[in-house]
Image 1 (cartoon, rainbow, N blue to C red):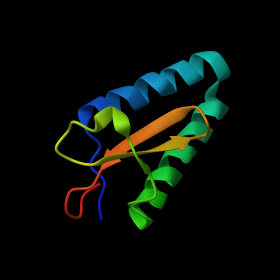
Image 2: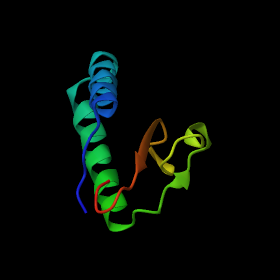
Image 3: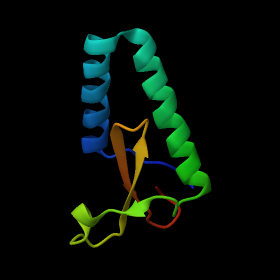
Image 4: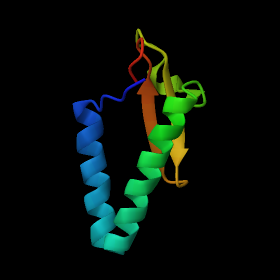
Length: 83
C-alpha cells in the first residue's frame, strides 16, 4: 500500500503546522509531524482502523478518519492499493 497526499491535505497540513509553530514553537511542530507520520504508517498496516466519517457519506468512496493527538483529524479513503 502507498500513500498519495491530495492537495487539500497538503495545504491543511501546512496550515496546521504553521499555526502550531506560531503558537507553540518548533518542538511541538516536530511532534505533530511525527504524530502524522506514525498515524499514516498505522493506517497503512491497518487500513480499516479509522471510523467511517459521516461528513463524507455522500461521496463515491468510503472515507474514514482517525484523530491525531486529540486535536487533528486525518481523513482518508482506500482505492486499490492506494491510501
